[in-house]
Image 1 (tube, rainbow, N blue to C red):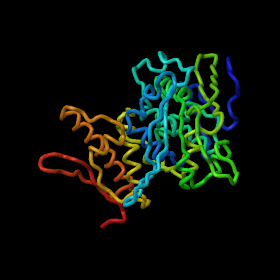
Image 2: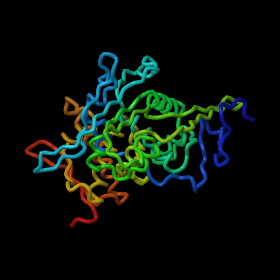
Image 3: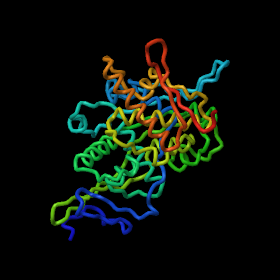
Image 4: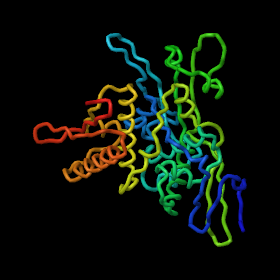
Length: 350
């Protein structure tokens, strides 16, 4: 018997097993998501590697938010750049003491993974989702049930994302015809079908909108969920840009590795590079550690032991992906006595 219900009943397709702890949802096979969607626009990538853009307080200046340039296109041999002006910042209603009680004032790799998981579920027609479902998608349908602390961490991240506003002035992208599919922006009210020349086009919205739901059994077991209200703002932008990258779930879950912020950041970046190379959008299968740290938004350890641990994390990932057939091999790159990067190989290469 359910003791308490807030805003909704459980979806008829969800079977909640309260005997197994916090909010496990046993899903019908037809609801299982085949791949995690990564949002891979230059704006998303700049959000990761640009410390000013990623700092949720850099966007403030005398009570007004500041924008930072995100290079969208640069044509070699021509003096032409296309730049969008972007900002991420807490909205006025955010309780910063609660949101940042661990001292994190930026959008972390973990936050981005939660955002991509929610967006993936939304794209697949799931606007009412349990926090356990979000956990399953962001961890590649691991066989482990989420613990209470893992559910709590997801909930804190969701509240944080709900409190962050995103501002994108994409006027230059529209004028240079870099929006491949205008329809998502038209449906969101950002663009229209008018034939007049566009003077200004801006996205300004919170990163997420949702209602919270909670069910508690007589025995005190808890089932938490959210109802997503409208398409997430960055998902709308990435659908318009056609910069969504779907990663099969078999490559998201990692055996024997803790789901830390650094692990997620490394994994997301490496998968983006590998799939970009395999689909022909990237030419280089050589990844320098310097580039990996910069573009994944992680700091390189100052001590050699920390760097060795990072290299071991990266090689374990690549080894697992090789065993699963994503790549055919890999090798570390050495210059002199120093390890400077990794090179991966695919089935298309000798």
